[in-house]
Image (cartoon, rainbow, N blue to C red; front, side, top):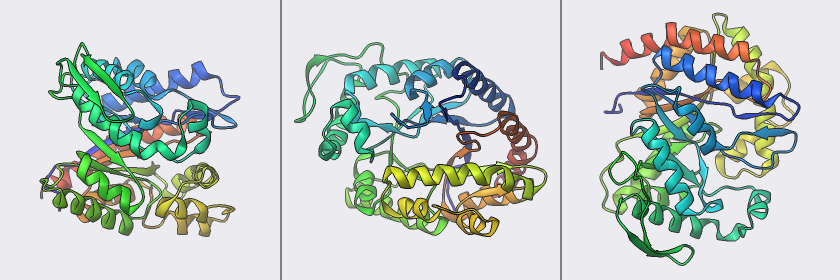
Length: 351
C-alpha cells in the first residue's frame, strides 16, 4: 500500500483535429480546468508533441501558463516535456514563472522523446537525445538555485547565469521521469524525483516498472521516491456501456497514432496491438487491466486499485482524446467530482 495519499488530477487533451476551431478548443480547456478546480481535483496536466499530421497541438508550457490563472489550488504538471528539444535556460525561466503563478505547485515531468521528425524539425540529432536529457536535468537544477551558476555538461554551457525570478519551490519543482524501457526507468531512479508511468502499459507491467525505478534509486543510495505517478485512461458515465462506447473510438485512434509514431517498449507493444482493432471485444481486451472506463462504481474501484495494489500516489486521468465531444468531457468531470472522488477519498481514508 502506498504511504502517500492518492492525488487525482486531469490530463487535458490539447491535441485536436486540424479543422477544429482553435479558439473554441482553448476556451473548452479553460472551462474544464475551472470545472476541475470547483470539483476538488488535485491537479491538471498537459503534454507535448510537434508536427502531428492531421492535428494541431497546443504548446505545452504556454498552455499551462494560460491555464494557471484558472487552476486555483490545483497543482500543474507536464506529462511530459521533451527535454532534449529545449534549451535549459528557456525551460528554467518558463517553469519558474508557472511555479510562481500556481503557488509553488508545479511538477516537471521530462522524457527523451521518440519521434525522429520532431528532432529533425528542432535541429537536434536524434541520437543525442539521452545525453541532452541528462545534461538538461543537471542544468535545470543549477539554474533553479536562485544564484548565479556556471555549467559545462558537454551539451549546454553557461557562466554566471542567474534565473530570476526563481521558482517558489526551493531548488525548483520536482523533476519526474517518464520512460518505458527498463534501462531508461532504472536510470530515471538515479536522476529523477519520481516516476511517471505511461497509460499504454497494463497494471502488471506498471507494478514491475515501479520496482525497476525503486531499484535504480536504491542502487544510487537514494531514499524511496515519495511519489509514484501514472497517466491513466479514464472515462465515466452512469451507464458503463455508454462510457465504453464514447471512449473506444478515440482511444483506438490515439493508440494507432502511438504505433505509427514509433513508440517503443511495452507501451509501444500495447499501441501496436490496438492497430486495426474495431470490435467491442477487441477493445475490451485492450482496456482490460489497463484502462479505467465504466460507471461510477467501476471507476471508483479502478482508481482505488491503482493506489492500493500498485502504489500509485498521483493519477493524471486522461478523460478526453482528439475528436472527443466536449459536452461528454464536461459530463465526465462532473460525475467524477460528484460521485467518484468522494467515494475514493472516503474509502482510502480508512487505510
